[in-house]
Image 1 (tube, rainbow, N blue to C red):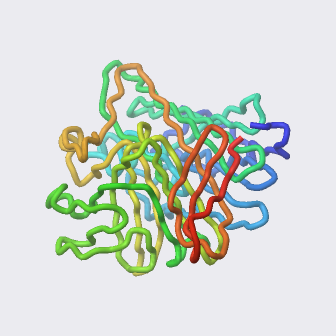
Image 2: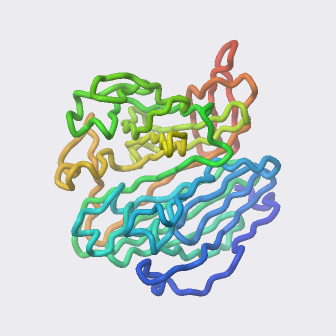
Length: 372
């Protein structure tokens, strides 16, 4: 990236000198601190406590799609002494609840990295921040690099997960991007190139018997349908899909506020997409864009999750002893025109992102972002 064009970067808002080894979630209660990156267009904020990306907004608009957070008292019991779920957080080791034995051992919901402190190391290259955390109970090490574009509303994330055990094991990793705040209302539209899928509530009956194709889904065992792109109905769900393309993408758009947030990734890194619509007290609470390595949730046993496939996709990733793997994704914001209806495709190269969209009238049009 053209780092010399980066106006400035504030890497530490508040300093914290507490060592990582002293940050065991069962014994510590700490104040969050943020790492903040800026360019002429946007501000990007990352939490040290839990490692979540909690703010991504245009400097002159202040509308943050990732403005979502679970209150401490609403967190799962095993997570209450650690970091809250907020914004775009990372599930490592599991997507959902641990087993009963794991709960007794202190393993939190969605894994340790999202529940504890991350240490940041300033890279000598301006515009890039590195972070890491270790899971003392599960013996994972997670390293992350975030690169903000020099001028545009775009950042790239590279994450490396290392198995520190002397034995290989199956695991899951899911990017849990969760939308809320002033950005979220019933007009929000979610688009994707997702393919075949299923409702997580219905798969205990039959994985393939209730299969459907994006964007239409079954909301119940009677096969009543819902449109997954819309946010206006009162039904909550987690709809899980495979991606049949080399590149996976998903966007969420608020037409009235003129803003789109999008994600794009290689499907060899993340072959599954989960689209969540959360309803709380009868009202829209969140929309989630969750892309990852696993498809089956915690309603299935660990044995089933390791064995069952869907359209040839495995549900867990095998990580050999003392080995590591690296995965990447890109996130971007776009101001959309007033005639925007829906995203039809997202194309990405090393230097740019192109978003094709359907206007209210006329042919497909393109919006572009320079990544570097």
